[in-house]
Amino acid sequence: MNLTVAITGMNARADNPGPGLAVARCLRESDAGTRIVGLGYEALDPGLYHRGYVDAGYLLPYPSHGEDALLARILELHQREHIDVLIACLDSEMLSFARIEAELNNAGIRTFLPDAQQLALRNKDRLPELGERAGLSVPQTQSVYQSAFFYGCEAEGWRYPLMVKGLFYDAKLAHNADEAVVAFQRIAAEWGLPVLVQSLVPGEEVNLAGVGDGKGGLAGAVMMKKRALTDKGKGWAGISIYDEELLQSAQRFCAATRWRGGFELEMLRDEKGGLHLIEINPRFPAWIYLSAGVGRNLPELQVKLAQGQRVLPLLPAPAGIWFIRYAEEVIVSLAEFENIIVRGETREAGELQCA
Image (cartoon, rainbow, N blue to C red):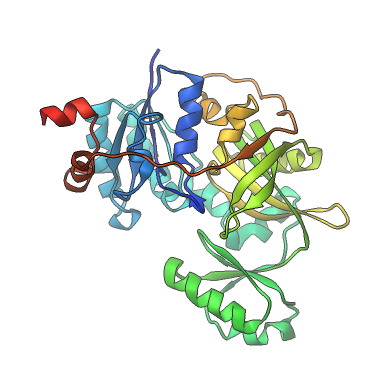
């Protein structure tokens, strides 16, 4: 049976791409009959126009416009596209989609998303609490509302360098109080308060993308190490690994939260071999195409779970497979670009000529 799957996160900046286009690529390769609808927030989101992986593209209202506006737009698109499954790919929209999941389900749009309580458990400011619950080591973390904190924090036991993080996105390394204040101001201006401070654990970062089955189990996982980074610290190249302790950490996370859907664990292995949880992303990472590359297609697995299919846990992925990212130009006609500006949608070339 052919499906229509709607996927958000169609932005694809080279230094900090969204996951949407990679998720679409995974699904396109898993089933050539799947119709893919790309959903984005900006007219310059290239995934909206990429006909190799996306059959149609539409703009959504910004999350700040509220859940009623988001639901109305999705239901409008459902009338046109008959969406079977929706995959949300951006942190900032996850709570909104969780809150309208029942209405989407009633309309026939299936999702497989964490609920509001699960999302709150993995918030960056609650990582220590989650770590205790799941038996995971977490670096010291604190919410900060005033920049003056950074000039007195050493008296409270903090030591530079420190990581300064936004509640949703962004992280900067600060070697002293002045650098920390600059980072605090920039992150607060873009993402709001609180800003988080986290003690730095020297070590090597390891990452795991997984799918929780919603019942406390880990349905599938792919692990990797970054081998080249962008200026924003995002993986430009990486290699698949097998790390039993990292896998067990993901299993404990799923068991503690009964996680539904895709996620990413970001952990550091210190000089003594210990693992420390530094972040949990509540959706697939931008490097998720590696899961298709190693034969463990996690977006395909999530679509099956959303449809209520029974799935067997995937075997661990093979180690030693690289991904190397590249930038690509998407060619867009002026008529198509104007159409998304005016109507909030892209159309295929034949449709544009008839319009």
